[in-house]
Length: 162
Image (cartoon, rainbow, N blue to C red; front, side):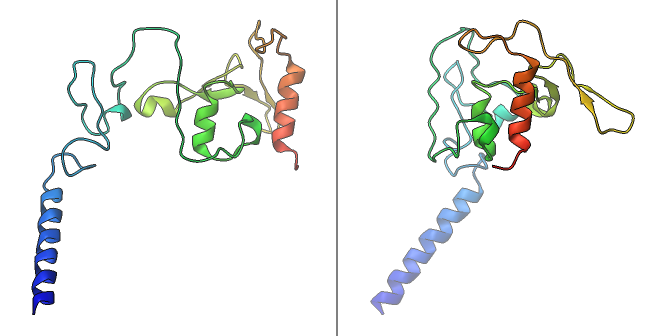
């Protein structure tokens, strides 16, 4: 008898908790804060998923230190040797590909843009040859100029079986 009464109380508490969570104003949490929300410059809370369409709490300062915490081990820090999308996003902090995506919020970030190329490239009439021109004055971190041979090597090593 005691066991069934305890089970009924626990079940009732769970049902009540689920009902309250369903009534939450924030679809990501039951308390209206936490997952999916962030603080704004004025100390208030940003709307759920606000960063999908606009910058939340943007900085007006340039430079500084970026600390990026991850819960998993990246498959590779080499931009030409990785597979996972989250690692590719991380790579955008230190590597610039031939073409990339615009750095902006919302659907704008789905737009293809030149990285080290001067434009999106042109194709031959049969669609088998693509031509790109790279920006002038590009250098590696050690000051060595980036050449078309470097770009050719980078493209070839991503398409060659290892």
